Image (cartoon, rainbow, N blue to C red; front, top):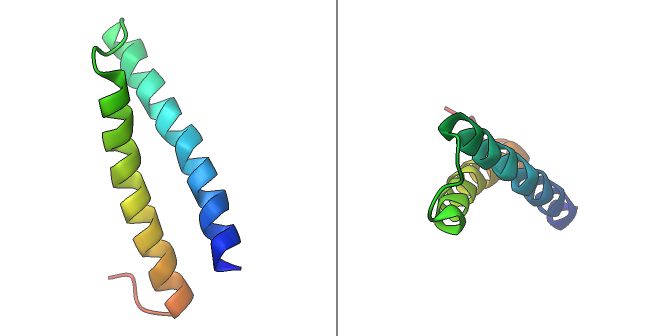
Length: 64
């Protein structure tokens, strides 16, 4: 069950990260020079935060 939940969240995070990156590029008016690195950095941060929250919720620990 956990593997399925983490997989679904990971797919959602991929699309969320892509949306954030496109939004940044839209406001900037041009593509970022190191787009892959920026994508990786955003994905890394949101993944770590999201998976920590999921683990705490599944274990029943308080979030704060």
